[in-house]
Length: 148
Image 1 (tube, rainbow, N blue to C red):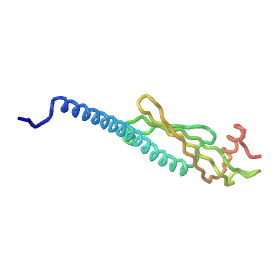
Image 2: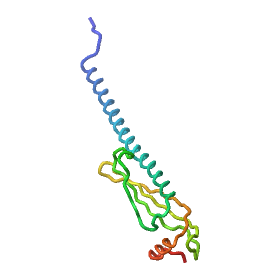
Image 3: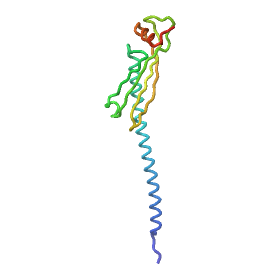
Image 4: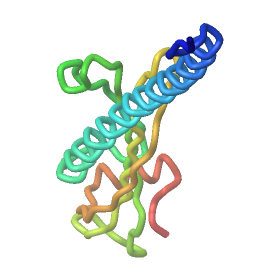
């Protein structure tokens, strides 16, 4: 009389194959979750960087040629330590320009955030039209950036 069913060896081989497949699947899911979290942090940083760049492009009276920085509030960063550093420099100033003359200003913004113990960052650049003030001319002269 012949019995139907699987032998112990067949069951062990099937279990081993299934265990290898599940381990591979779990590894892929873990990698995907890690990449998703990294991309979420980067997207959040990009969104906040664009917002900060808009603020800088609209701001008036900011000191030129001197870096300034700040941190972002934890409630907007999702609890991740995040900050920024910006610098405004003259880009195109007409020769012999005096106070009140329009010129093009370069805005450079670096946004940074912590990913565990690693610091990540990227830089945005923008330009906006500004009016030259006497204080700007004095600051640029002292920094060697005055128009010729």
